[in-house]
Length: 70
Image (tube, rainbow, N blue to C red; front, side):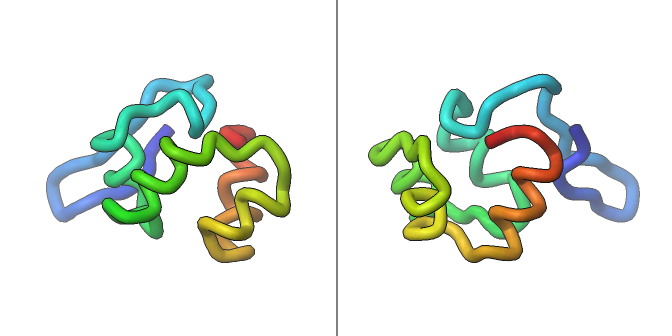
């Protein structure tokens, strides 16, 4: 799953995967999830939409849900 790109590079994660199973570094490469959100995801291990929306914005939730990684 391509999560970000540069001029001559791609940042990818192995698919299929679940977001709550990723390491902090893997979470941080996802566009829209920084260090603080990565730490919050690892600490909370959210399983409901309400818990996810306490950590990430709705737009990012919808994008990740559409990708099937939540």
